[in-house]
Amino acid sequence: MTPSDTPEDPALWEDATRLVRGGLARTPYGETSEALFLTQSFVYATAEEADARFAGSGPGPHFVYSRYANPTTQMFEDRLALLEGAERCRSTASGMSAIAVALTGLLRAGDHVVSGRALFGSCRWILSNHLPRFGVETTAVYGPDLDAWRAAVRPNTKVFFIETPANPLLEMSDIAGVCAIAREIGARVVVDNVFATPIFQKPLTLGADVVAYSATKHIDGGGRVLGGAILCSHQIMEEAYRDLLRHTGPALSPFNAWVLLKGMETLDLRVRRQSETAAALADRLAEHSKVVRIFYPTREDHPQYAIAKKQMTGGGNLVAFDLGSQAAAFNFLNALEIVDISNNLGDAKSLATHPATTTHRAMSAEQRAEVGVTDGCVRLSVGLEGVTDLARDLSRALEAA
Ligand SMILES: Cc1ncc(COP(=O)(O)O)c(C=O)c1O
Image 1 (cartoon, rainbow, N blue to C red):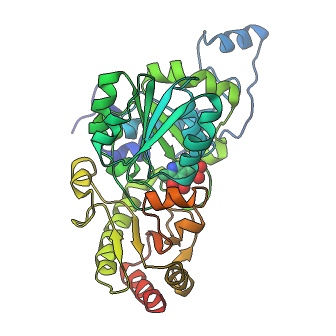
Image 2: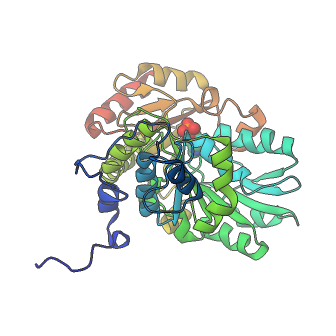
Image 3: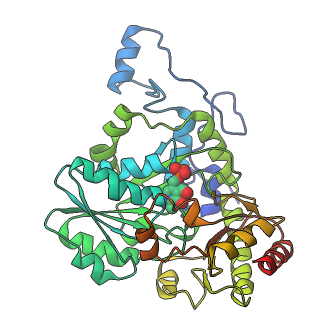
């Protein structure tokens, strides 16, 4: 091979390459690893230079304050944008700040939002309790039913919000189908893609306008830092989010961005391995007499298996199952010896939680009943441990359930 005259176009790279090389901006020192710019602000040689940088004119980078932008957070944003196939990405301090900004930036008093009703508890709280305080109406529908999304449309519907697979029972909505309805009425579609990960589902290619992440989960992958991200077109970023982010300040710490950049280097490897293990464990759990119901996207008995086949390229690392009662679920959790009891997910360590009393306790009992989050439900986030060890731990804990 001879050296090419034209530089590599990162848009041609595979995901694995994007995750390692995307957004990399080396300093003149030529460091191998991404540089950590742990600085709040920047200095200028002259007042004229400060004037030019604030105006965004003149040569060189235009960093002025890390609430607006920072070289390390920008590397993280550029890497994730490349992976997602988005024109722009902005990072935030947590997944919830990303969701809050993604929604509020597109809405004003008098608007209406339609969402799936199966959502992470804090997302459901934003829709049910927070947005209505500012004059935004919301309707929660049964996500898998496209007719329900269509029937919920009002003249003032401006945003559809989808979480798929949804936390915790992995209920799925048809992203392309909801986007088609949104296009007919000129509404925007925001997708929380946390459970699927950017490896197994690409909502922008299915017609979504905005994708939001909790980077706290698989993107970190080591349970270390909180982070979030919003991805969309240049136009939406400038019109809806740029000023909101700048003036309300939910900025990602550069240190956290650096940790997340390192996490991304192994994201593809990790989630593929975790997904393989999760699929194998789901099959074993399904056969156990104490498991009343099992939920895993790529199992044929999942109620929305057809949707998973259409829009996901892997099932992901989350498995949910029902043990029939809170007592059985608690006995199971308390008997685990390798898997930790934790409400987090996407970690290298396998983690299990009881959604009704942890992640989904912000929802009312009626809201939980509506989405099938019973007292017997357990959510398992499969980590990177050996599949045989995990299977043994689950079997032992099921005996105690
Ligand atoms: C689907 C989903 N969206 C958003 C979030 C919020 O992320 P964070 O904890 O980083 O704010 C979570 C957290 O568990 C989640 O599961």
